[in-house]
Length: 82
Image 1 (cartoon, rainbow, N blue to C red):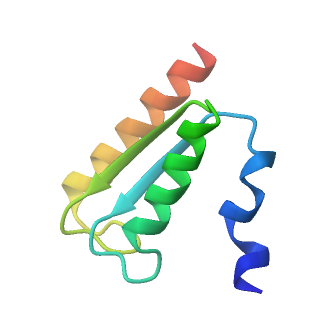
Image 2 (image 1 turned 120 degrees about the vertical axis):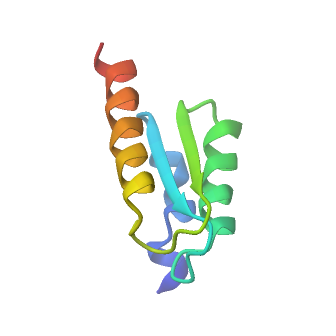
């Protein structure tokens, strides 16, 4: 079931830019999983951005990370939509 639902299993279906926001201390989705997706996107030439937040877990609790994540989302969307 895990493999069936994994984004890596369906990476060939990705056609649009992807933003990955990852907590370095995430125990639910370890950084290695996000980095595998990042690497697969890069190998396929799919535009992407990857931001790793030190000291953050699954869901950002710190104000600085939260603000930066929102700014990153806006910048990423601005690149895609102008």
